[in-house]
Length: 349
Image (cartoon, rainbow, N blue to C red; front, side):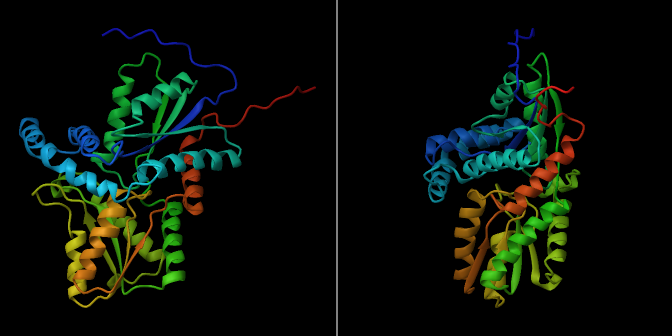
């Protein structure tokens, strides 16, 4: 298929290096129709659901997209803000802060955010960056632990965009930062700040997003990287092994997923006599439906109903200074060798 003629990129003083911050995405509104559009795009991705297409399409269109949107819309409505989706708001803010932090360190880089599913799409933002003169793009998925269904899918979207582009910018990808000391330190600071106000609970539960169990057997490193993140945070925060619990949330379907599961574990702990628990979600760098509703509403209710008396949710990193400083250092590490300094002006004798 012939490529369309591309307009000349913008010239002048615009930065030629860009960072594309990517996250999962959300519906445009907390309504059944918007959720249906979002879920259709999300669940059609073969990276997300790895079963034969004809079987999955029958399940998706015959059952899930008929029943789930209305239920999910209520859940989204419970966390929606005047600015819209919490995930979109936080990701937008993180991208703007990242540009500012880099600027303070003398680096002139365009930073934009995109969503793998929903708006703004990865392709549309890459079009915008290219039209603005970007010759080099660092793709930064906001997933600390590599997973084919998340990080891998972002790469798919970038490569798909590239197939229709005649003159490609240079591309780099950050695949993981699950053991980056700066990311670990930011998580530990988040916990320490919480403990300064509330004290330490009997147990610290770290909940990561779940994936089907078979993905681990197929070679996905996600489970091991989640466990390594948990180990490093616990080590730095001086959490004893007997006081640490690592779980996985957000199951879909009847297949076995990575275990132990978050909500059943919380119920079991409460039934065993644990009264006070701290919960943090290190796999998410921005609060979203899975943290604000699934954990801080549904899981909280389950723990308290089972006999617990105090459930303390520790927010995601969001716009925390230590996290943004860590993110800017991570970006600069991967930008090495690319032009990011502002051009000097004036004449030299």
